Image: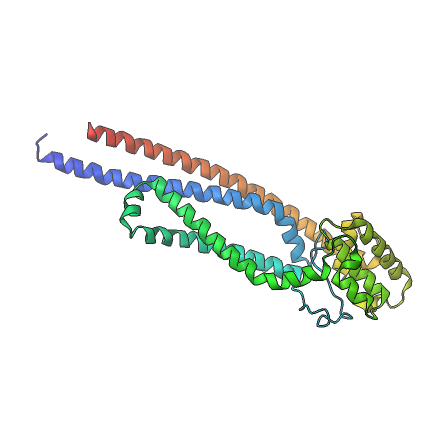
Length: 305
């Protein structure tokens, strides 16, 4: 082999090394992305039933106060509360925004830091570059989360103040309002039962007492259907207290409950498949990345020797 061939071979080897390193980095990124998909699927498994129920306008326990049309929300100094499904969709919208925004923004963060020589030198290492990317992702996620909850604080605080109490439900603002008003006793039972269930932890004994009067009113009060009570809310209240619906109005949503359970089971199976596939892909990409890294190290060692 002539000496003139040697520089050509070295240049060729360096080009191949560069290609191998890019492939190795790509495999590692795919492994991380697959791992992130597994984590996301695993997290959704814990909330998927609430999501499906929300699409049918249902919750397995009382999540928010429902004010029937006979209650003046202006007197209570609160706006009309957003329904649970809208809150759920808003939460998913923010989740998508935070994932995409933090993911893309983290790359922009790395690009910005590379303008400084200190970081430009250190980011030649893929590990340090990845650590910097993770730091950027966390910072952006935290910032967007702060904005999300700051926007929702006003409405949440208004309803929290309305239903909050320490020892007795009579201490709550809504109980004080009802005591000073001419609201029908059945409507009062409906609101106070919800208030007791919204208490942290739920005030089961108080809620059961008000619910018993509410159930009695449904059987005996001919004007019960005129109060504007929400069947889905009654179902949630009885589900939380007794584990099943007992009254006709609450049972009227059972068909929706069956559909929700059916789709919840299907979605759960899909999530298990996605999570398993994501773990498999993450492992494959990780092994490929390690194999490419090993080849790169061996070639570099041979060139140096």
